[in-house]
Image (cartoon, helix red, strand yellow):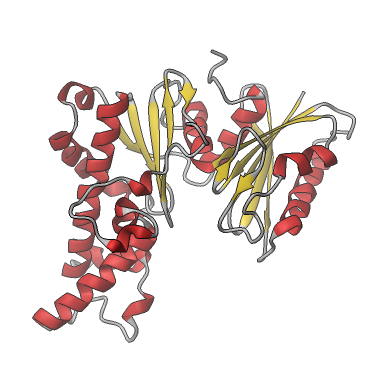
Length: 325
């Protein structure tokens, strides 16, 4: 059996050949360069063909292909909703792959599912059967592994963590992507910084690191850079994010009693240094026995958790269990 894992993002796709033990043998990356629809699928075909050629794999070889997608993978239909890829609102990805690679098994999973499977296979949560991966990037999502099983839900939307309710009263600002994501994702940190900056300018005559010519273009990366220089606006925004990351993690601990909470995505990254502070915040809110038995950590696979997770689902051929159970 040949195992191929593919990690599809909004701008690129990475792929690898894996062994039975999910060891990566050959890997490669191609960029999407703004493609959408079937053009992205053609890019996937090109990557698969290149990996097979480099691995001396013939078309008649039996293959198992696992694909990590940035959105929702509908298990009943094999279709995909990927908002960052034009034309992938209900895209028949599994069907397209089987048409091209007929002697294959094809499994498609969401990125958050693949992240937790990658971490429990080759990362900081290796060997865990109860762990949660909180991915904080442009948005926020969570992959949830409980009793050796990844949770999916009635329509494969488990882990839409950005919608966690962590403040009251309700603010219409949260309509688009939820309370948690509006405050603590990469986009949310930038948004909150613009709001806090305007207040500081009006009330205190702010002249700090973030007072550039166009505050509307502030990014989360710039906020973290300003924080290192002691900027008061950046400190207020990141302190708020740390509090809410802790509250969200506490809710996961109380609900699911995991062995580990892993933080990843582009924001962790620079926010990895705050994991201990996030744990201290979670201690205030979580079930006291469960939180003391739970370890918090930053991902050890910042660029490859999704790809290793795709390797896991390729190897299993299904997603119902982990470690063969």
